[in-house]
Image (cartoon, rainbow, N blue to C red; front, side, top):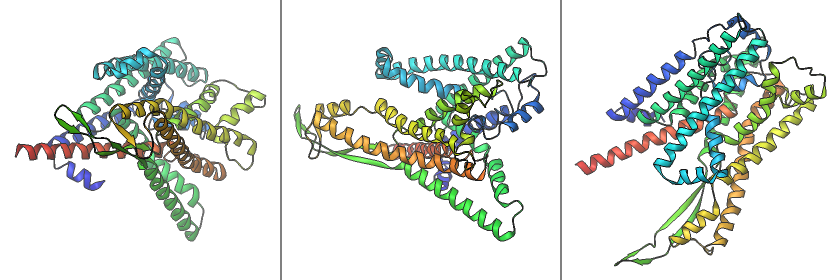
Length: 438
């Protein structure tokens, strides 16, 4: 990784793109420090501390701490991510959107435009819920409709600005801009989370115990990172052979190729789906006086990840089991809408391609579906391992600051690998251009 970055800074075009990306990220982090007008910061801090370990920690990790400080970027790019996922699902359900997606660049521009409008709509809805919810909890200096309107406008504008910054990074910088913004937000909270984690296991302990605890934590983190890298990079290659055929006066085909199927085909999407589905009612309930002694309150406690894997109250770990099942189900669901074995098999048949030992057509699609089901299960189990370990450790040892693990770790590794691959691709293209010019 360091070698790639060092070589990239030697190339003027790529170096300028890196500088532009860094400059935009500085703007992002600066905006995360500007509070929303009218918010009582001390009340916000106290409210968030009372709900430490609850669902708010997930949103705070995604926003780089700007949610708990209620800055102008409190919503960050979560509305854009949500709208992008919704558009992907609607593309499968609505034929017109599916046609637009297949229309090439023009169709994708229309879908992107719809995604932007949907992002603004979601930002308005989320900011309104936050403004009213926090207002009822007494977190405003004055809870009036004026301050509610100011909060809605500020948070919506902040989310729109970050969406624009992400698109600018994609066009003029390096990597996927939205992913880069999400990455810097997560990374910004790493120092504080690591310090609190080490303090939790070393405070009040003797030197030998402290050294052992630090060593175990470091080994666990390194092992988790290595496992996540393997999970993100693992690929099952399906060998494909193309038959020779006459095209005009030339004989074409006859070459060998392969279909790359990623083990973690769905990426972090299943985890986000499962987490969002379980946490949404919990987050909404935080703004109201819910009686947790009732059946509804018990259900909310079960859905709250802060109560999972607690040896004192094992009944709430039912929510953890539901979470694991949802990850597996969403992994299969999302993969089914992003990879169509029947379409791939038909395209191969039209081009004269076939999988060795498998007849073209339906036998090929059945074979691909069988392989896909197998590797999706492996990928889903891998996601479960990455996400379950920090939840189990948090529940058993009562550690609330492990936002850099689980979902965040998958995002960090995925974005870093994707960005490095893009930098290497740009350097390779530049090398080819230089060779041709010579």
